Image 1: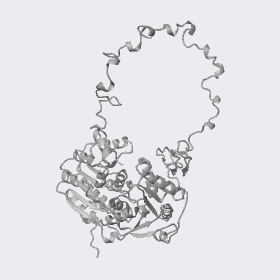
Image 2: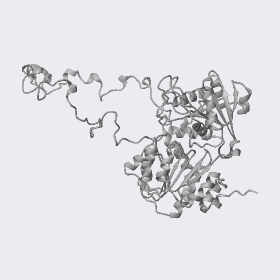
Image 3: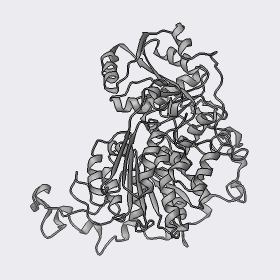
Image 4: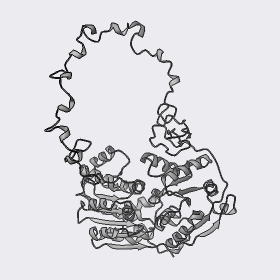
Length: 558
């Protein structure tokens, strides 16, 4: 007999339970079951669970229930709850989970992060919101400019706090938390509780209750690890074969340049792929992620930016094209598959020079991988990723904004240009201009797009008169005097003094002192003290070189 509780048994408001039921969510996961009751009681909560364990609902549900209970009015620029996250993608994911639940209760939510303009975020705060999901850098910008007031904050949540510590945001998080009311509720959720998180806990959480939910054997059994020993020569052939199999594949590389190159190579080989890394603008990152989750491209090539907070259903295969440096990153990457009890496969590509490193990774991560030597055409590839391999052209993923015009063949401007050599390809729809090569585009529009006229299409220059009348009708230039009198009637230039006396009468330049003493008597330049110089904007004097100003802008969120 199944005795597991339902969301209704946890004491959540009926509208929230109804919304969860409409989404097919009936029974809470262990981390939700453990933390919701204490969070509903208003206690500061510290929760730890592995990636994909359901931490988002563990804090959003009690937050919404407590805001509904307090029922305080919504005010301009003064949100009632704040959720801090390390990345833009995680902010969007949390808001996607939160928004339908909040709407059921008549509450407003918004996101705040860098990489996009300020006006819409400021407008949302001015109109009043109940909950803000924010990255620390942009949120501090809005605090310092007076566009957000934290005096009304009732609940503050830190999600993926350890990742914020890795990115260097602890100072900003501390600055934000210090501005929230001391008697407010605070919750901290993360996959790990280290890297200085204990200092935040001691300083800002009041007698917190701690819940740590470890993975059970049943959950671990849904994820199968393989170490594929490959040579550098056949490494791409194996990757290409795996990504061409049916189902979604998420491929991790160590660098942004590596992600770009691998995406280009896969597209050229007939495997529709998109990239996700920090060099892309937020609009392009959102577009590529939507293309991956929507099925236009079944392969996403990403850096560790996608290792946290990116949730796409039914990712069958996670591939470490470049093994990460540490086991925590390995676990976070791998956690993009086999989420919430689903099955998944994780493959690590191991070249000869990485053998010792991946053995240490496996030991630290606590996994027992299946290690096998692999080359293109081996039966293990069909066993791990069954199905017929399909190679096709990359579809267009650019949103059409009207016919004609624009540098991207009618699809609007895309300012993220490929920086790698060999063609500067754009991945669907648009005609981004590459920095080098031929500007090749996949999915519509040439390297320069269809909207910009070429010189030879404009017609000869003499067909475009620059005046209302032809040149031959204007008269010679010497018939158009430049002064009221002819030049020959003007005084010669040499007779026109340039100052109080004639230039030739001024004497040699060395006899004209430039300061209180002769230039030659001033001594070497280094002996003359210089005062502080104004900065390039004409503001107050800057500090010594190498020192950062106390008013320096905070680091931006990734």
